[in-house]
Image 1 (cartoon, rainbow, N blue to C red):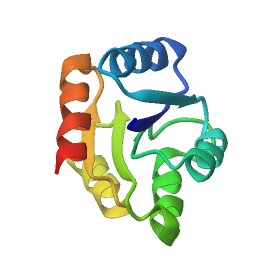
Image 2: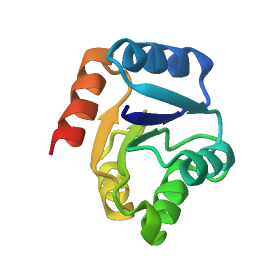
Image 3: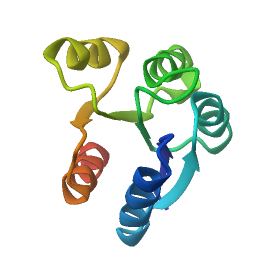
Image 4: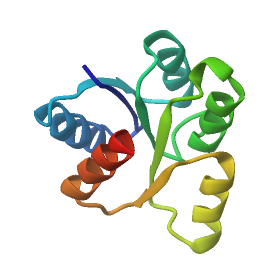
Length: 121
């Protein structure tokens, strides 16, 4: 089964995303801060991680950097889910190693489609 890590400090958004992805058949693990996210990435080896940039330390950009520096996690896809939607914010996310960027507010269907697309490609 495909595993998706969702790291988000807003409980409502975390529940919304996790519920949608579980409904789509994914095994979903959740984290509420960057430290939990890094622990779960290393323990569970998710196929994809959906990360909030603005979560408690380390932030989503630092989590991506650490994922990308670990050769054993090379296949992990990363989607940034964030309210920071300026072109410079998006570029920083891509430069850090994000595979996709979804801005808040977002459609759960759009996010689910991005997850599916990254896993297929």
